[in-house]
Length: 335
Image (cartoon, rainbow, N blue to C red; front, top):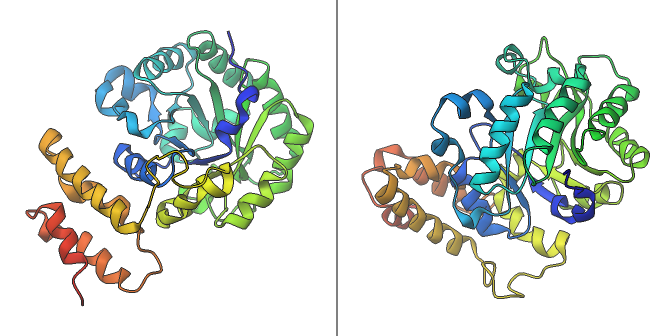
């Protein structure tokens, strides 16, 4: 039975995007220290990786990360249904289908942004997952393909897929150029068309429409929230993570510490100390070297005096034999 996510649209009000090689479970643990309310997404996991690989390595996460959503990459309905079932059993609160990645590697697998040219196939994939799990099935996609700009294309895509039981669409407000641009350039060069995302919400008022792409500060988020149900943040959230510490109060009207939660008395130093303890714990439990985790916190002191020295210390792999608490002490020594 499809879950009508429009009944709980506040879930998607502000979220952190799935970012390949960035939004792993260590990054999500860090982000959850900064915001209790924002929805966090995994990096994309392909159906092939789950069906033929180490399921635990791809799906493992800790309870502190919740609410967390799993993004899948694939185009075979039965494979996606199987992987959605794994994700739901593992405890993910949402399964998201990637219809937005433009990389050639993803295209060779016949999924990602190229799926937008096959809305019926996407609808079949969504229905297969909706019929298998009880958590919401959502789709992340672009507004178009290549350099042809036509609002009717994305409108018809959303209309067809929604008929299969998808009630939430996360819309990157740029076209995906499948030839001639790298994935990085695809995040910058195709023009942003926020008005098209607004039109989708106007044309489909009963759906949850989340805007993604090019948003870098609070005022922009608030402006978009006047037109759509949610905003997804990516690179700015990663590179300037302290911004997340404002989100619960600003976007969810949830003052820090109101219920005695993790944000009580939050400081950068307290977050850094918790992450140092987490790094030590992960090394003891799983043998994970601290630099593997520390790379995610390098923006924590963004814009503060001494930030360059602090980043340099936490980035210094020659210190990997030290305990994270010792590295933290070095990072805070006067230059």
